[in-house]
Image 1: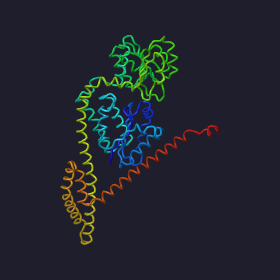
Image 2: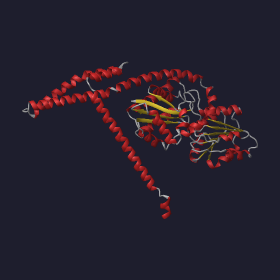
Image 3: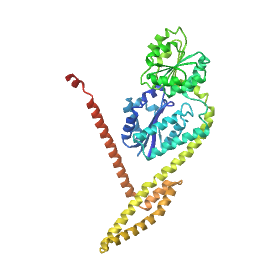
Image 4: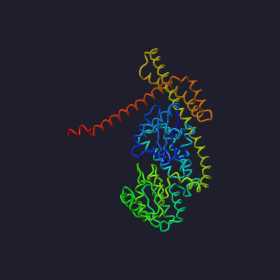
Length: 465
């Protein structure tokens, strides 16, 4: 069993690359299922945010794992691996576990210590449980990571100072305008990031905020929390003409504003400067907008320098959290060692049961006159002897497995009781069960795809109607 993570994040890939590898919320269940179908993958969780796309997997062998994960990314997103391989990182076992703990705790975020990533990791894990793509390893590891992150934020106070991408965006606007007094702020999108941005704007003196969203009810809900004005997306250009600051954060797959639209609006603004911040991935605003006169356009990567000015206290807390992570890694390592005991105990019990049954068969042949009651008493007593003989070895191997040289203890235990054949048989059955599960799922998806295709008439069929 090996734990592997492969991904791209803000450190390894610019936003122009990352935006090509974002999962939509509706596609994630199918993505989990298809990833788990891949050869050798036993469990999986996909974590996707605006700053990272990561595939966490449990595999039965390491040497081909990177190849299969690259193949999944290439197929799912339709991007040749030559275009993303240099941006892709792959961590295995201890490095992968350490990375997950860092991610959940906010230590690997663009804004160190931010708390939003914890909710995203939790949601990713819950979805993977719903899609039945996790097992005993990830069910334990991700719960441990989430619990650790909660404790880290509570005990260190790393999130007390408001440092986030939305906060950095507001700070950047203050640098340009000095203050938000008498400034009109246009928020495009009504999601969590937009709500955080509005909170920071009001805290910094903004007196008028307009929220534009594709779903008007969501814009009204957000604007109502801050005494703002809600509007639908078809009024976006009208509001753009009067705004001083535009902060865009939608979940749109395509651009929300292009260069030509903004250029047309600028004619109505009489050279008033327009400050635009794009904190969406994929980007909402056409990068070419920044070429227009009196327009100052920044995307999410431009915010990094501002974020760095607010990180000193969080870095101190991060040192403490790193110590907590090391301790949790030891806990998980000890747990995985004891996990290896279960197959051994099962193999020992299976061997003991076989010996017991063979002994009983031999006894019945040598003493054919024994009645059912006598056989029952003998079976019960001999079974009790077997169980008593196994009790101490089972207790001791559990204790030894949790110690420093637990792997060696398991190996010696296997040799002493000659359990190699039983372990091999268990592995064969488990592999057969995993293959059956994968084949069943594949057949089900093929059937669903056929039904889906059958439900849509072809062009030829429509022509005959």
